[in-house]
Image 1 (cartoon, rainbow, N blue to C red):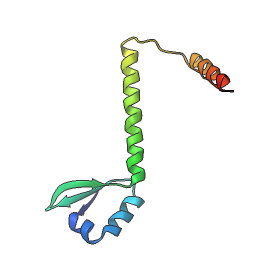
Image 2: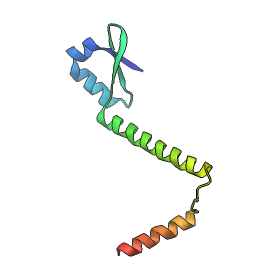
Image 3: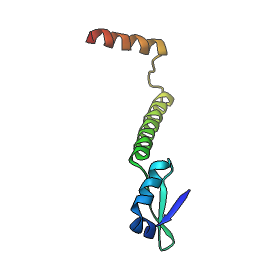
Image 4: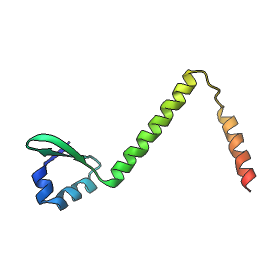
Length: 89
């Protein structure tokens, strides 16, 4: 865990910017000794957002499976994809 003070952020922004770009970890910023905010690179943020989106989709799919909704076998999915590809050609 990387922790820096808000004074460091204010006085040496470039150090914090370099730190978040070099690390895949977020940097925790404190104010008056208490946690205040988290800073991370855009790349790490976007990766986390994509992961959260994927997890949400997997959760929905699992709920559908548990509720007995119709599923497709791998072969059925493959055949449907081939049909779509052939329609586009």
